[in-house]
Length: 101
Image (cartoon, rainbow, N blue to C red):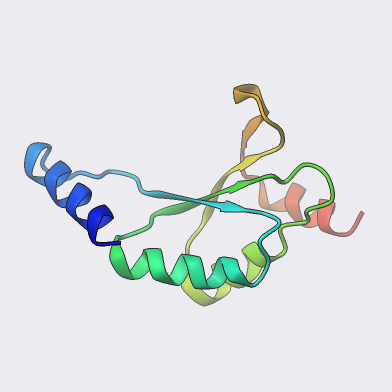
């Protein structure tokens, strides 16, 4: 985490106002461990959003609701496969619908 903080500090010195966006990539299959990861990263740097990866297959990604509720970090993107075109902007309504189907 110290190295991550140093990287942020260097970027801030070189580009005023940076970083403009800090996305935490979480594995949708991680479960409760994702909350611990999110808390740890949030303490080290100002996380502005979550990229939820591996949402294809059996992973439901329900932990995202807990992270949003507990830490108020919005989900911005989801990964539905392995290719760049499998990345999508997060749509809360579609996500909730998918949880119950």
